[in-house]
Image (cartoon, rainbow, N blue to C red; front, side):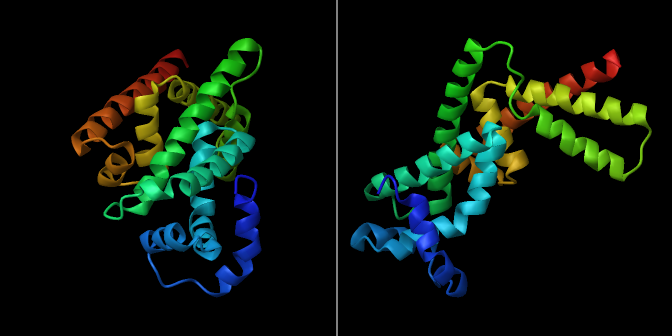
Length: 216
């Protein structure tokens, strides 16, 4: 199974696209757990492939590591399906697994970067390029484009230095668009804790933005 998560998805992908199964995520996982039905598993991969990969890509900042984390996430779904609580939402359980995979990937990434201190921060070049394209479409002055890009880079650096417990909340609520309740379910935290962590994280990012303005 370890080597066939993506193969499984593509093997059934065409049929799934033309025949969306009228069952919930939870029912699909229980069907897979009880019978080993590969199409049920493939349907779960199909339903979350784009959304979850985009989350991991943004969380980790590296496409290849995100792909590894995506594979690792669904491998864990396969290995741990017997532990799934049917009273819990599958999406929250899935994102909890994916977030742990992302945290592990970022930890390995930091260890690698510590060995090569000359390496540029992962994802910054792509981020600046995207922002420059957006700014160019609104035709600001060259000085304004440069200043905006510098601000975004400064905030991106501040985001990368957030403690993991703050970083994960920002990724789930701000970038993934989850509600406080859903993020709390993913992180197994009270809703109030999610709100306070998000407030603290946003404050730190706002400080970075303000410092960049003052420096400019």
